[in-house]
View 1: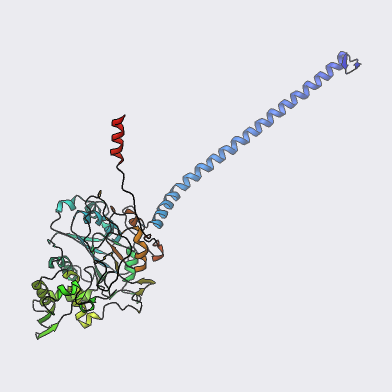
View 2 (view 1 turned 30 degrees about the vertical axis):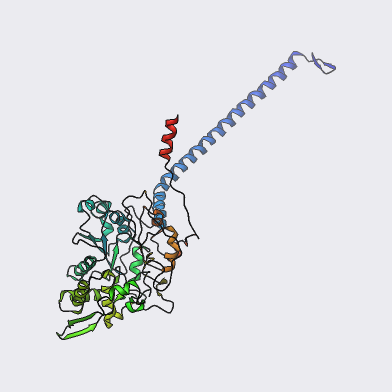
Length: 471
């Protein structure tokens, strides 16, 4: 008997057994179906998971070389350097013959970055080490490792010599340049270069080696090839050397060079005839871009003791005038009409343009020249100074050149310069993160604020030592 709500239902044993058996059979079939369904779902889930894991594994295996190449590509596009720090060069364009001058420990330390930035298989690089710098310092330097051990100077031919004891302001400052010129016109190196560029080791190129080669490409009409540049940004007449008579008579440079009067030079020309000519002093820079024909002229002239160049050299040494490395070659170049015509021909705004590059000066330097200068001009921007904590960083002379940093990038961009000086990782390492570039638009337009004042570097070690003692 089954009681259902308020009603009583009579059910016999046979009926109850049928109901129970029927319910039990349905339950077993449901359980069997459920187990079968769960097994099928589990099998499919396992299969899907295995497939996904296999696909993920194959994906990462396939992507490993791709990611490696992409990492190299990203590094190359942002910095443009390989593992040695060298830039790519396709072998086209002008072949550059460089002279790098090292004179102390600081320039030795800075030189390795310059060398990495200018080296290319088409270039020849001469390095002169001042006799005052022990050769052992070079042999234990990063520069030596880069040239001889690790990277073979990116394929450049590098010649290192220690020949001259240089004295600032004296004629000896000319010696490395003239020595290098002699090497370049010799049979060993002749016809292997298109332009001679000399640099101080604390310089840096604004553009990559490929771009500089393109600018001096002898096979392009729109090129700097065949032009002699003998000035830098401090030159008051821009891309052209400044004649001494351009300065007021009271200006110290003019007074210094005119102490002995005009430079009247007696010499013998190529035909053996005696001549007398005045050579007007022209101020330029000791750092130059020179074409092969003019280099050959200077070398051959100095080898002839009776030539105009040799007699002019003797007169300068006799008068003991200073800074002849900034006046000798510019004056020779300007004096000879044939070579004078190879000077740049700036437009009315004072610049030349090549391959889209506007060049107002070939090298950017901060040379404030005891401002205001001879023409009342002043430099309003601040400049970088050497911190007391700096090691092996010499303090610039009163007139410069001064160290450059990231705040100078805007002025460097405006100048269109191919090289800058002087730079030091100790003064501002950030500058090396932006230069060299492949296009002027890649130079950030960062300039000096109206005035910058920075806090003194706190010596926390000393303060922490005091606190520990108090504890």
